[in-house]
Length: 158
View 1 (cartoon, rainbow, N blue to C red):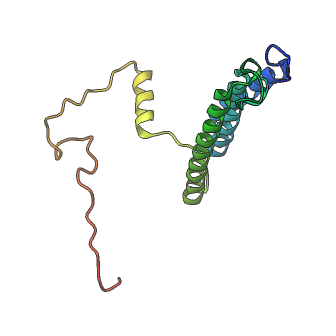
View 2 (view 1 turned 90 degrees about the vertical axis):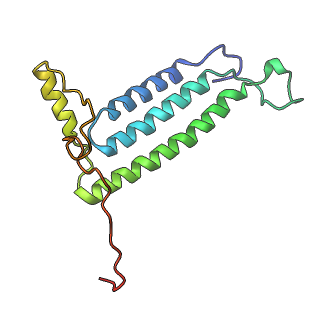
View 3 (view 1 turned 30 degrees about the vertical axis):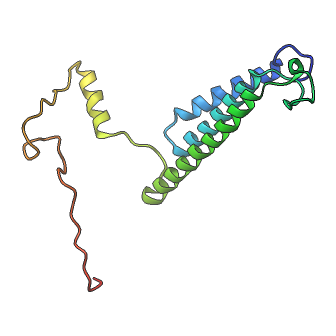
């Protein structure tokens, strides 16, 4: 954005559209690497959109220019916060992708067993049975492991 222009240029608006569209497309993939790239592109596109919403002008320092000619500092502060949040989310997704690659040799997200059951019920147009409760932890078929496993610490080192 240049000084004296009433709004954002067409190139910047198109850049926001391309970044957001590409980011959303990559987010819908199964690979964690592509999901990570989608989060990064989407975050950059939204940050650029927030910056385009602010008023351009002189530096927002008191006494440097009349207040009407100063740029809006709020979008800049919001983008700075969003950059930190996007960096944290990127680091988390990178750790998840690395752990998935390390344990299984692949970074593809698999379907859950519950997801498959919901798809089968939807195909047959059925409703899942409600868990009314009251049967106790030993008789509940949904309860896989009612108590956490207790570990025994051995002092002999084996």
